[in-house]
Every structure is written in structure tokens, then in C-alpha cells.
Length: 344
Image (cartoon, rainbow, N blue to C red; front, side, top):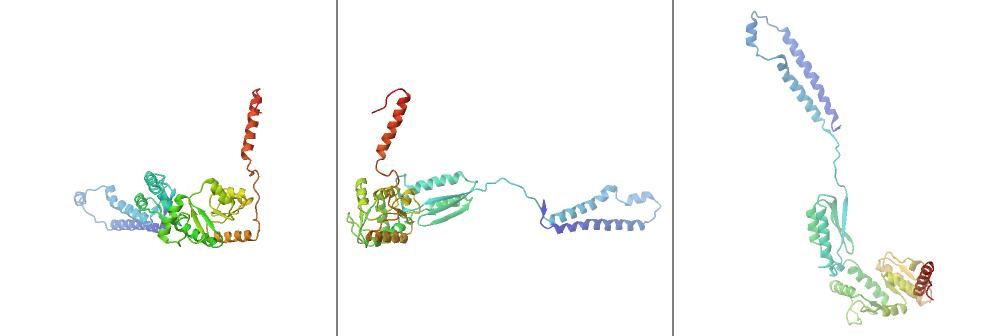
């Protein structure tokens, strides 16, 4: 228990002051006694009230003054109340890839439905916020308990070309086009990537160039191929001066083949290709990608080897034979324990 205005309790001093005034008033009345000869006459003139009844108004006045003083001091108490203090942030991708129909009816609709069902299930519980991201992340709805506001925001989601599928890939292609001014660049594009580039090209506009399919993409020296088979793709890597990728598998293949590789990502799940192989992680900045590409081309022009060109241990192409040997040893050990003979 605490008081907001404890000085207001000084008003309680009014109670003894009023009591003193009442006592003095009673005392003066006694001095002004009038003598009468008939007691019956006095009883007739004075109302018939007991001693306690006469004191009730004074007691009520004292209580009223006490309540008024205490109320003015504004007493307050801290009472623990069970509540949920958790906050949940829902992050939704709204890039162009969310229009894909690999999930029915499409990715963005499926994500909206799942998010809506989750928000409804948490009504009255933790606060929920909504973040959408494409080229940049945007707080669409700050953490709130207003379910209606969240559902309204979900219903208004639209996809954009803000990720590497849209504006980012156009900026990256512009950097690669500058590399293509110095050396021919071949771009085997996944069908979905080709569609997204075409959609972004129509929206933003790109310089026209020839591709193997006769379409348009970015600039002279840059060709976009249909998706290549695995062996054809390896052949392209093997004869390349430089490979730019975001694929973990391509990072391994370039290291095995000894071809310089620039990984257009902030991280890699194949760190051995950086520490012992030919891979460089250059981040997601197109300008940084361009500078690293020009540096690799400069090294290739002067015959300078990369900082790390050795293959990691056991990357010798003999994995299958080692697996067979291990299986034979395990099989022979099992048969020896059973008293049999292993394969020759």
C-alpha cells in the first residue's frame, strides 16, 4: 500500500479540532443552565433521544472527515495480475518468388492463410507484429493485440520485385554486364529465374542483348542459356576463367576443378571451399561483386594463382572406391564373427 499524496493525511488533524470545538460547545451549554421547577415540563420540551443517539451525528461527521482525508491522499496498491508478456513477430516474404504455384494456390496465398489461422488462434494471448521483406524489411504492423488490424494488413499483401529476383537481380546483372565488357559471360538460367528476369525487365527496363533463344537480357557479351544438363554445366565450369554463383554445390565443383569462384552471398555452408579451395564469399553488394570479379580477371591475365588452389583432403574423385572398401571391411568383420567367409 502506498499514497500518491501522503501530505493530504494532515487533513486528519481536523478531526481532533472538531472534537475539541464540540467539547467546548457542550461545556458552555452546561454553564448556561436554566433552573425549572417541573421535571415533567422539561421532559415534554426535550425530544426523546437517548445519549448514544445524540452522538451519532458527531460520529458520522468524524468518519466523513477521515474518509475525505484518506481519499485525498490517494492510496494505491500494487496487485499482481496474470498476463502474457510474450511478443511474436511474423516475417513474410513478399518477393516475386511467392507467386510460384508449387504450393496451392500459390505461395503468398498459402502464407497468408497460415498466418491468419495462427493469429486467430492467439487471440487474447501474446502481442503479434507483422514484418514483410523483399529488397528491404518493413514493419507492416508493430506488436499489437488487435487481431482485426493484423488480419486487415495480411489481406493487403502484394508481391514485389524487391529481392534478388527483382531489383536486386537487375543490379547484379548490371555489375555482371560490366564484367562482360572484358570477357564473355554465359548465364545458364533456371526457368523460374528466366521468367522473373523477364518480368523485372518489363517493369524496370534493361538494355537489349542477344541470347541463345533470341530474347533480350542485359548487354553485349552476356548470354543467357536455357538450363543446362549436369555434364554440360560441369563442362562450362571447367573451361571458365571465373564462376559467379550462390549455389553450395557449385562452390564444391569449382574447388574440385580449380576454377576461381565468387559466392554472391553473405555466408557459405561450405567453408572448406574458402579455407582450402578457390571460393571467395563476396557478400550481396553488386559493386563488391564487380570489384572481386575484376581482381580475379586481373590475376588470370597475369597468370597469378589464387590465394588457395589446393583440393581439400579426400577430394580426389575416389569416394566410391573408398565406400566399397569400407563396406567390404564391415561385411568381412560381421562374417568373421559369425564364423563365415567374406567376399574375395
